[in-house]
Length: 590
Image 1 (tube, rainbow, N blue to C red):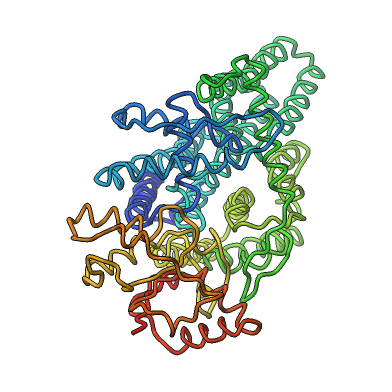
Image 2 (cartoon, rainbow, N blue to C red; image 1 turned 180 degrees about the vertical axis):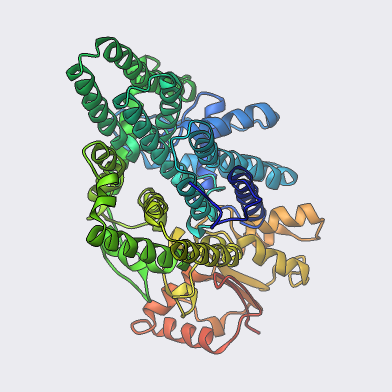
């Protein structure tokens, strides 16, 4: 397809694609350096360290990325010598002690050497940024080398991914939400390539396609247990392919395909057992079956958690809603507005084409392509169906596996744009998308698009808005302006989102790095502000450090709790001396 209406004629699509990769890493590195450690990262770091000694923790999540970070710790940080707590993991039983142990170990590791803190966090985050960029390798390989993806679709999808606040705010974190989405998508796309190649009798690169598929599937199911839904999709697709080959009496092709399929699926089992033997190898239970049961227990732990209820903060109140209700409410406010324009435009063209140009539709929706359409939509539809009624709402990030397929759908619909004016409208939509995406970068995790015209903290909580990502900036402000004396004699009190490396920990780290004179124990000893029982105006302290989570609690209780009402009155009538992204606030009390 000609790309001249989307980019300069002189700029080859391959070069433009490489330029997008540069933008991806530039945004990722910038946000890595400007985002404090978030809630779950310390747990995954602690688990990674435990794996260096074969004393597994954090079994409620698969191991792949934690093992990669374990390798980094083993190679570059071997001088750390921490004691891994002895946890008695009993098969079939969930242990709160085991869950907390990973957080505590990660805390101890990060606080062990203050001068290494930022470099250690940066290096471990870089692993995730790198693996989440595998999507570009896949797209380049299958677009420009294997010629399986239309250039226009591939490049537009890459633009949507790179400039998506949803993904660029998370793709560098030591977490799995982006990886789950990316590798599930790539698994499905590679499986579609395999299906199409075999049906069309193209066997030349089949082994390479299976190698790519095996890797993508392995990373997908080793990132989060929810991606196990890829297994029945894979088995079902391979069964259909095998039946078609048998029907064509292509026995040699059927045998070759069966061997490749078996090898790919067996590799999943082998690699999973290998990982669990590495991570849990020095625990008392050492047989292969014991390692498999650890994997199964992790699945059970996830299922038990998913059945819980958590009331998320939404538009000024804590409400009990389903995942579907939450997604419908939050989607329009967390995505790049340019996406809505592109989606509306491409769907309008699709409807017009369906109505007036049925022959064009027959070229795309026919007996040959219909199985590919079913396969391409199976994963997001199954994921949506399984999660839509859940009331365990933690954040927008749990919908990323659906969102990434929405991006691909919008990019794919551009194949129906045949007229020059349509391509110019597409160019305008992409330009708007890029512009708004760049504007949203400083917001990072707390991104809210211009359709939300209220204070940001009134929208949502947890990882959707505040995952503890602004703490270091608040501490930096206090130190830069020398507002903290050596001893905390009622100088400051605080309350923040529950990250185990919070205000005092960052103060401890930064004062050591900057050689700032301080008695850190006096700050550790200071009790935290309780917004439900303490009135701000009666506090003996000079400064109050809070974040959006505290504001939300006060706001919700202002009608029922007189103390909360007084505190809300103070917050409403006093401007903070410092705030960042409408997430963290420092108030001067006296």
